[in-house]
Amino acid sequence: MNMVISLRKATYEECPLIHTIQVKSFIGLLQKYNDFDSSPAAESLDKIEQRFMQPYTDYYFILASDQIVGMLRVC
Image (cartoon, rainbow, N blue to C red; front, side):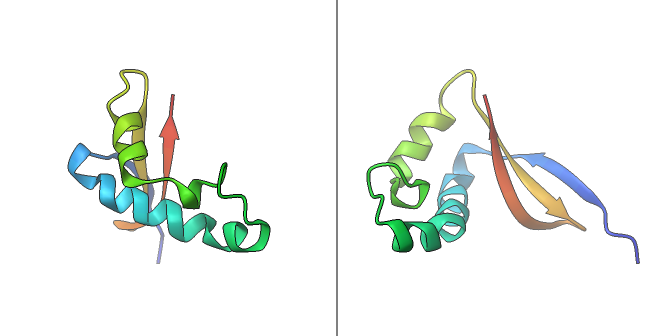
């Protein structure tokens, strides 16, 4: 079976999902280093929504065979 990797641009309504993925991705490092001032896991949903609205920022979901497996931010 071939796995198809693709990107899909996120919508503003998906900011909570972006936040969830970001927290899950970085929570281990936050717990290890307690870097609450700089860890992406410590950022609020509001911060992601603010970034999403920047005219030079786009968020994309990484899909593997139509399943979300990650996300990225492009500036």
